[in-house]
Image 1 (tube, rainbow, N blue to C red):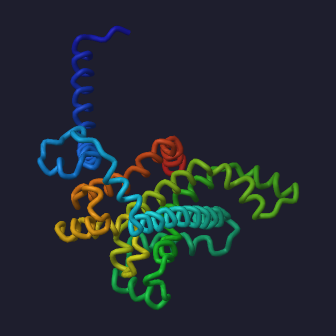
Image 2: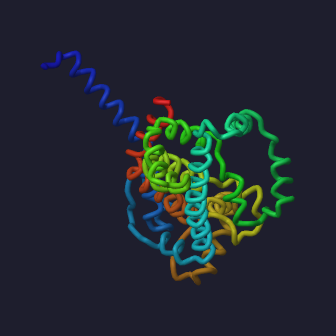
Length: 292
């Protein structure tokens, strides 16, 4: 089908607008990446916008050799791994139970998970609850409060409701228990929506700085985001003095160059993982929400 001149002009203008919009979205990352890969003293002169003028890995070598930054990065990775595995597993089990019409507490639990979506006790009661449970200044502060996400449960429950009941009936006739049916049939078939939930949970854990900022005062339990926040809010001159002392003047860095490198280090992993989960993300959302 041959397109008219008007359609060709519209497509060309539309493409140019999309390219311009994409560049505006990507430019902050490009600028930060260029600064982080440039010599720190040279970067202070300005004029770096798209690519480094004096390329160097010094900023990243300092980050990955610094014990505090390495520890914060380790805590972040541990938090994401433990948080994703535990939350996805428990949300899937909770949602599977809610699909059983014979379960006596099904209606009660459905309302029980919906109410907190609209009503919340607030920050102070939540803080007191964590204090009473001895979860303040603990790694499990990052994990336990978020184990059951109401939205995630509803999404997974809707997806599992659409699975054929004949699969479970056939398995029961063959003598399979409920746990065997869940782990061998339901869990593998729910891979698209569970991958979506894993992406939600992983991104949430990776980007979260508020939990560590509010409930964690032990700096050894800080995540990379908390350490980045500390670097941004700290006095740059004192940061530079600390860094110079730390590396005995063998490497030229500034607080600004370290901040830029930290920004890349804290955002790059999520940007790299997302394309691999995107196909599950789209499929899981469509089947878990619209179809239900």
